Length: 370
Image (cartoon, rainbow, N blue to C red; front, side, top):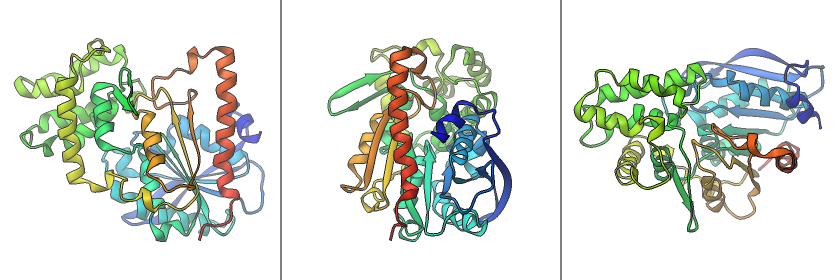
């Protein structure tokens, strides 16, 4: 398979990429266009959304995926969502930006007429689903793929601060990647009633998230503990206590419930504040309106968004719209189990990933959605 060959040899001459700019809602939007290495006629087109990440469209994993997708015969446009790269959440930018990106792909005259595929990763996954439910956007789509998205903001924040999630009575506990909590705390802590004066804490959390993103060091690693301590300098009393809820030493997490009551309560208050400020964080109203063929994928050992959220997304989308839901152990936001799978496990997960990939790529083979 062309995609897999290109993905496994990312240094090869498998695709060509060029920078472009298209008119956005708030000024010109930079983007990267990935195409097959050899000239071809009109191609199935994809618009791909990155998540809340400092590297934006230049994230190494995203680049590798997009170049492999282009090598397999697709035109791939990846817009830079500047707010998300600067770790400003702003979900309202997604719908107009996606519309503008679709128009830009048409104007570049490299994609087949009749609609494109939309794929989002992480925060971009859920925002892509919300955008795909918008009637004006939907009529330009052949399908939508969401990788690593969330359904429930409260459950997402609870997982970020406690590492715990559940589905249908089954419960899991893993050390969470604190990066997501730092981003949400930076954006919404001062909007939590009683914490309006915690600007120093919110700024410290933003600096933590920026440093983790810029250094590409896993935020939950013991190696990052000195950075947490550095950004705590100057915080005292209640400020320091709140900071430590978001950024405890890596050794503080255990599988028991010691931290959970306070962290759980604070996560709920933070989620309430976030939703009051940004109702579009919640995809609940949009999901029942989805009609474009949809693919949902998630990493089982994802430490930022728990895999149980993929099932919750599927359950709120109308019957027949989700063509496949796939949970894989090969790819996650962070952490990961793939290194411990062994040869048999890797082969099994490889076959599962290929099936999932075929489902995603097949979205652009469907007739344009009307």
